[in-house]
Image (cartoon, rainbow, N blue to C red):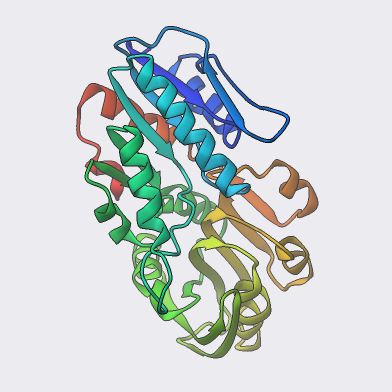
Length: 314
């Protein structure tokens, strides 16, 4: 059991935090996160953290703003309780899609969240599969950016090893899909699409050979599942794919996502638990949820022991 580590969590990742704590052989720290009647969040740390190396696990998923505020208040409470070092473990970093100005007079929201986290006093951030890698540059503190690809690849190797083709759902995800295809020694295909507005896209055609193959659409997240189901999966099936599967790190699954997946040609939707999946998994039997707890636990251990984390990036 690593000495000097304290592990805390807000409301968004309690199950994942318990898994990480079990791997590390330590308990989850005692903290109360509740609300006043008007909705204000109240945080109280119920144990001594003076001089401790503290890790706060909190995905900024739905409800996004509530979870961000919980995280900020918990960090502030720990800072004022004289924790020696605070690492924000954010398996899913909300607002990551707003990483640049795409129109006049819009914010760069990913940068604003980074500024808030830095200002409140974290010493380091640990995260998984940022939507855009350059978000690391928004921080003036160290950022350890892990990838869920090894976790997803291990499962795919066991179940879908033969006749694999990895499909990028758009041109922006080609580098990510290529790296995943290389890991699995698979071929690569690309969906050529044109996005008209947020959460609405139109597939043009499939670049690459998917005929007779097990096609795995690989992306960093699935939000409303419009791209994956109504465009990408259908186009791949029309081009002769034997089976259509999708894999991603973050299953946001908002709005009509679950209904779309249930009605789609997708046979398996492989995701991780960076975002809690309990209720969603009950509503959608196509979901296969893999745990990133061992990956995050190993990273936490190495950060605490001040040993290399770089081998976990691959």
